[in-house]
Amino acid sequence: MALRSFSFGRVRPTVSSRRSSVAARAPLTVVASASVADLNAKFAIPGSVEFKEGKSGSTMVVLKHACGASAEMYLYGACVTSWKQPSGDEVLYVRPDAVFDKSKPISGGVPHCFPQFGPGAMQQHGFARNLDWAVSTTSADPNPDDKDPSVEVVLTESDYTLKMWPHKFKAVYTVSLHGEQLVCQLRVINTDDKPFDFTAALHTYIEVLAIEKAKVTGLKGLTYLCKAKDPKTPETKKEDRDEVTFTGYTDSVYLNSPSHVELEVGTGAAVALDSSGWEDTVVWNPHLTMKDCYQHFCCVENAKFGKAATVAPGESWTATVTMSVVDVTK
Image (cartoon, rainbow, N blue to C red):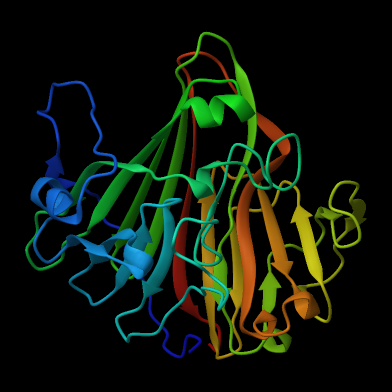
């Protein structure tokens, strides 16, 4: 069910109540391929952070805020698959063809595109969305009446990734609930002895009441790459609409987009995306190529695509998006 409640999150400073597999001054270690019981023993925070067996036996982490908001993320692909408001309304969308047995990336929620967005030299959207990420820390605000839960996961190079992308790296992904808001931060660290380039995106699926009622605002006047006809050789266009609506297949990358973009979902509510570090915005709906589900979601994605990120050895790149539900009827 698409959003029917209007709620406004509160961003508060984090973090105390912290669980980690290492002491404060020890080198960072991570826990990969651990059992749910082991993860809970090392990282669970009662009432705030819990690890569970999800669909097809895949491990997921559940964040719960005292206000009633919640989020779920699978460690496979570090894919956030649920973000609910205190009312119980789901904000994100997972496609009916999604599988959770690790045979392919999870189709829906907030999948990763790294170190390549779209088609290119390696597999579509890179490798980050079809690998297990390792848990490094969890945390929650110490205020017992208003805890802000958070989980940090890490992905590093392996023989599998080096065959596609010959670079050593550490990707650190932090997912938090700040009140009713969902906050996702990606940091990419170059642990190699040479610089590297990459493109990336958070491929966010947002549930809408009906695609013909959905509207994206904040993009007027921008140059965009229309990938609908050919994603490898997109057309360059300029957006002249106050509201981007959907009447057919849509796959557009808006370059140098503003930090604030909204998707009206058709119920009087909108999902606001406030970002830093992400320079572009992607708007996608598959229309009749996915007849059974296209009417129920729209992807509004934060991306780094128009100009690839370049990271020198020992340096890092960071991007954050804060998602909120807002009332657009006032």
